[in-house]
Length: 321
Length: 302
Image (cartoon, rainbow over all chains, first blue to last red; front, side):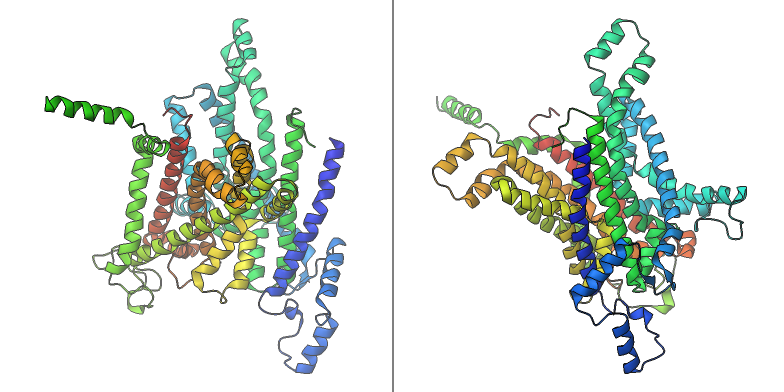
């Protein structure tokens, strides 16, 4: 297991290098100068521009520029944001807690709801309740998250006035106070509920089918024969077996949630990584754009790795080599 | 006498004919009410997308300052948007864009995925390793992020809608390739493939004539579901402003109006029609996909 994990982690390095190469080439292909923003736009003297280009290393051969970017990147120097006039690392550190907070809260909602629905549907399959749950999940799967988000804002923020419709915290609150955290939670609740409730389908379906399958196994028959209460059979004996494989979904969820942040954060005007990314693409802020792209690629790789490793831990029968 | 022989001949004819797998699948599909309703609905949508724009007399491109943000009326069935364009007419044109992107992306993705998957699966060994590592590499890109970046580069170089189709096709064939490969791997162990090989059939012919028809059911189901995913991707990207150019009407572009909180709050007629259209279309495609999956699976008894 340890050997396999190490090999997988080492295997990520060439993939990351390849990705960095792709990201760099894409940034080079983008219209405009990748480093143009650092040149004072009011000074149009060609000599000045040429000097700045020389100074910023924009005239170096491509491979030198690539190598400089990669080595800086590995050392944690992501460059400077031209639009925000600050270090990219600081900028991202500002925004990423919001994105992660939203991802975690929505995952919690997904787990709670899919758990309840899956347990019920698995225990009483082919009943009205099971069909209703299946129907709901069908709808949740078909409705795109941005449509759901728009409708949710319309009803819950505008018609009912229950939730704020933009931002991550009320303006003018002191960080660290109780009201501040309350307001943050209040702001994250609606997007997290929408995302969470839209993502239950795979979990519910898996849990339901696994419970049905497990309930036909011998250990359940033994438990029944011994006179164990039905509720205890389902809540203890079966659930323990069915819940383990769900862990593997977590890895994929990391990737989907963070990647999907672009859309969610735009709908709810929630200041996170996704919004920063769109902003950087629009304002040609290449340092920010490249860093976020690399970061999200890394997280996707990492998510897949977590999924694979958890798979092996959860089910030792799966051979990992 | 004559009458009797006539009936005899008829009955023998009936007995002889046993339904082909496709006929069985069609019968199963026809019995699936939900899938049939969805199919009819989708056909209606496709027909309106083809015919609708020819019938409507509204100009969907011209900005009309006299008619900005009008509520639904007899003249404008679904009202007008913030640029004074008729929402209903834009819905019809939008259906065209969205469906065309869905269909073309589905075609390209299935094509690339099938080619890569079948070559990897059939050849095995080094070629398989190489192709599958490449597939993994493609699958590791966060889809939305890379589509946005690629789209920004290509926009203006390739005309309008095709930029998006090319970009999303190039980034999403990985899943199909994996599925096709695994099905081919299982299928090629059969004796008839060995027989075909031993009489010297060309590999390309074995793949196209013998292997692909046997995995076609999987590919068809996948293609259906991909179409739904791609329509969602298109509308999502257009919603963000990184999809089709904003002067081309698409359901996503129309929905993008709802990013303005005044439109979202007070001018529901602008965003409810495209939102409903997207949802119903996706839902019906998904139902058709599920129906096909059931119908093409010989083990399902429904």
